[in-house]
Length: 412
Image (cartoon, rainbow, N blue to C red; front, side):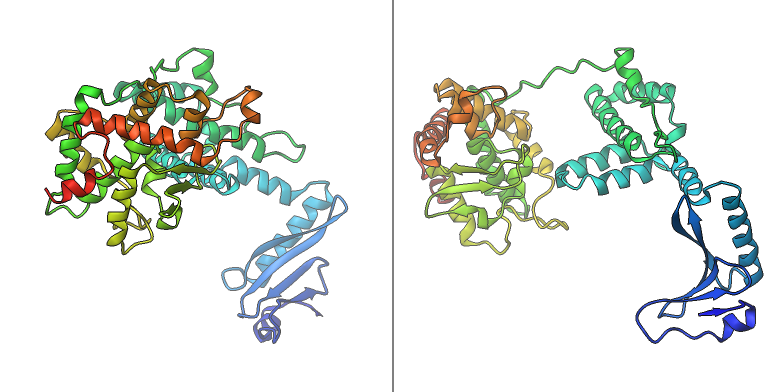
């Protein structure tokens, strides 16, 4: 529809009867128009050809913006285009230049759709704890010197945490380098300030953790876990106790165990399947008799789709550290969930479990090994190694090779 846009004309326009917006184009200034949505929202726009393509810009809503103010804004826009400028692209570029760390971070998470939920949580934790005062800071203002100072400050508390936080920041800057460009295709953020840490060799040399539960410590650890399992007054005690046993006897990672659903447990074939693994390859493991009995006992009273339910928004247990501290206090054995995985692998290696079978049990890829690509490991092929590992753990703890330990303790 065409008409000379004036206040009286705009006021008389009613919302369209269809579910699509209608446009009222000004007969005096070509390119100037009013858009009216089915809900009655009236906004001024201006459109014209820029480099051969029709481009449209929203000037603002009617009300806060008068007809004459909108007309003047449209005239200015059209004048800039006539002079060879591209106000839309230039405006976007300028807006991109002002993007804050928090805004780029959220865009990064949106674009990187395949990031695991646990990875996203970890990245958010680093942004929240390591860069709280940088979240609303324009990315372009974060300098190499600022990065060096923050890395050093974070390292005073935890060198490992400092390095991990900077790796997250580096990933965000690398993303920004490819995501935001000017009209000529040049990156708006060509330099990554975190590279300073590599150039100056400022990364901390954090030794890889090699801790595990020693064979001599297993009796006290088991006793503390079973005591936790039978503890009254702590709704999560028994759940965490069973989670710790599962991690020790399967070598699963903490997140893999905590998010386990009952649909992943096959009691007929005595297997467990983890779909969302660290290397993105599904993992199916045979269950030892000990773990099968433990899971059957849990399943008998299950009221949640999760094997280890929690009270939070995720539906499964999220933070087992309070109960783990109780196990440490009672046993004298300090440990982390990953220590249980290292213990599993160490026991397996001590039993001379075949190399490729061990790799399969912990879902590790064998990079550069052509032979590994020809080996198809059957789940049943892993059952005997799993039982041997379970028997070794139970024997070291003083229980002997039995799959009935859970029931024996429950009746003790």
